[in-house]
Length: 140
Image (cartoon, rainbow, N blue to C red; front, side, top):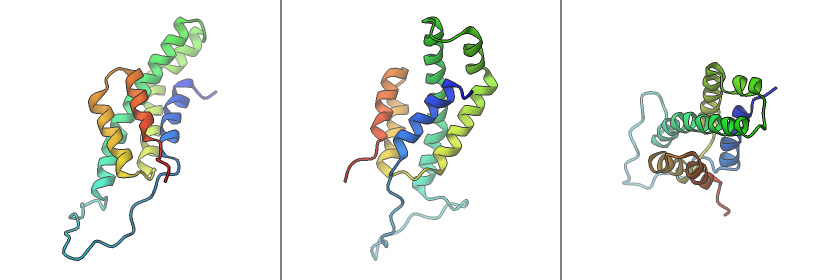
């Protein structure tokens, strides 16, 4: 059975990255310096996204663990389910899976900035989750 922890973390990522516009294919205007290529081939936006994904992945699984604890305390899940969902190996695996998928997601610079700002500005899970919901792709 897939844990609630994994489901909550993945829901954050999937809800926030679907239909995100891909990287721009427009040529760089003449006389404009393009960013120096990174030795690993990632663009500056991809490097920012990947750094933010690492932080957001850890926070998403932390918040999912807090939600699981509240569910256990409220009697919504069993002690065994709580122990299974908050097992360190499960948490590490869920974080790893989240980060891997996040790093493969196409995101706009706005979406990456939302992740960066939320990680800097919000420490409690409730406000952080509300903040990160702003990653939703904007209608065109």
